Length: 278
Image (cartoon, rainbow, N blue to C red; front, side, top):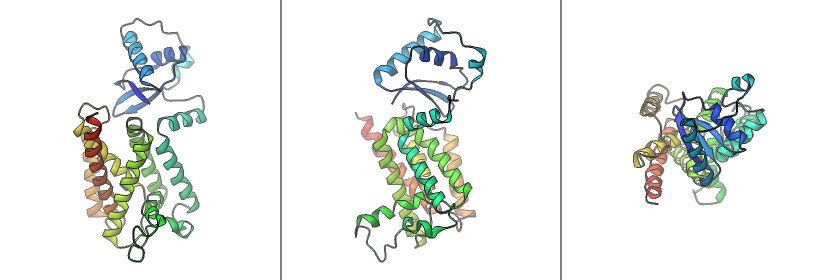
């Protein structure tokens, strides 16, 4: 997808959305760091929507008058749950698939209370099997990210995965986003295994911190990019990481958070510089 317009969230875009709908122009709207972003399917359509937006701001568009009931509908409400879900899949398919897999694993393991049902997803014992002994051993270094223990653990991670994923995926594309998530899962899981010496851990937190670290470095390398987070938000996550390490290191896989964060930061620097030169 291509970013067409980004405006302050305080602006009421509903009249402009009605106009796009009257012209049957495919589009999607997300919220990113206090801004509303209008997405289009192609660069051509993005340029056209941007031009139409400028005309709307100059009162040069004939906006169809909506009914009171239509105006009362929130900007992000779809006609149905299925329609909203399809839009979400269109915007960030990799993130949605990972969320669905995590939910399935949580169902199979009864929210982590039945770990034997998903025992094949825990980190392998590398003292008995080498990392490259078989593809399955390597895959199992990634799968602990799919495990969650309790509803709060699951919901917290998946909400942040969706929040960061829908920001990153339209910019990087599906394959790069998938590679980033696999890298941060590996980095976080490996760090936790080396720190704890066992594979009894899980969660998408390392990936979440990896996505945070990626955006942090990306906006540093590419300061003009629209992919960015408020500095205050980044600091809150970093302070939380330190506090978790001090106050709850025995209950939380702190090393996984740190490993994911550093992996994401490295990817943000490298990919940010590579794509900046194109």
